[in-house]
Amino acid sequence: MAILFYCPWDNSDQWLAALRSALPEDDFRVWPDVGDPEEIDFAMVWKIPPGVLAGFPNLLAIASLGAGVDALVDDPDLPRNVPVTRLVDPLMADRMAEYVCATVLHHHLGLDNYGLQQSRKHWQRHPTTDARDRTVALLGLGQMGQRCAQRLAALGFNLLGWSRSAREIAGIRCSHGLEALKDVLRQAEIAVLLLPLTERTVNLMDQATFSAMPEGGYLINCSRGECVVEDDLLAALDSGHLAGATLDAFRDEPLAAHSPLWRHPKVRITPHIASLSAAGTAAPILADQVRRARGGQPVADRVDIDNGY
Ligand code: GLV
Image (cartoon, rainbow, N blue to C red):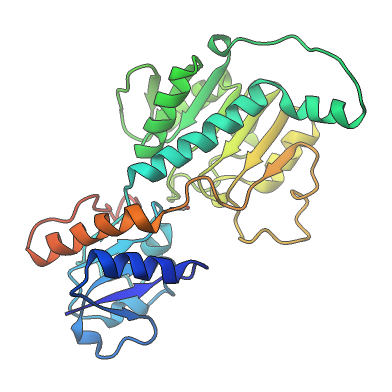
């Protein structure tokens, strides 16, 4: 039996080396150089072109090399009877929490404004807000959202959480369902998107949801670009309703040179780095999935294809 591997990232050699050392007996086939498709019993992939996975009749499971599975779920030819798993790596949740804490604190402390003042050699103090008086809403309370909640709670922020289905998490007031969203956003001085991309979250942040946020609200998108209507975000920033946004995910990546987001004075951009997956910690997790699938046990962190995540 053999493992299909497809990873379009710059460090795919490093991934392959880590996986080979976690599964030393295994034969890895790198798409498109796969040999006999019938020999492939497990797939480890990231954004493999749609339709390719349908060509392997003996797959026991398909594992995403990242946390998001939208590209897999969107494949119209995905073999529906084969379990799909997302990568759930505590290191990735830690990385996400670092990014979210850094960006929340940056905005909370007004550091963009002090940066501007520095460029003008201007010394002026502004009133401060204590963390307990700053409300941060986390939209999406999966593994990443929960880790962000723990870390932001430790910093003392007033936390709200919103998710599709009900959750109870210490230190955070949780609501769920679409009807509760606007009420959460009305209180959200900072809204952090940590949602999977599904048909329910596509275009979730639009003119109506931005206007529900308080004047001076701030958006942090660590989810997918498709969750935000870009023109509506720009309009909310230009009208002064939103104070700014930090964006780590975009509809088209890399972000095109002509995008108005690049030069917008209220937008900070990072190139989808909030929670990179790491070969060193992912390899043993993926190796365990292979052993489970081959041993006839259910794989961990199975995706519900109908729910989209
Ligand atoms: C990154 O966006 C991931 O889904 O892991």
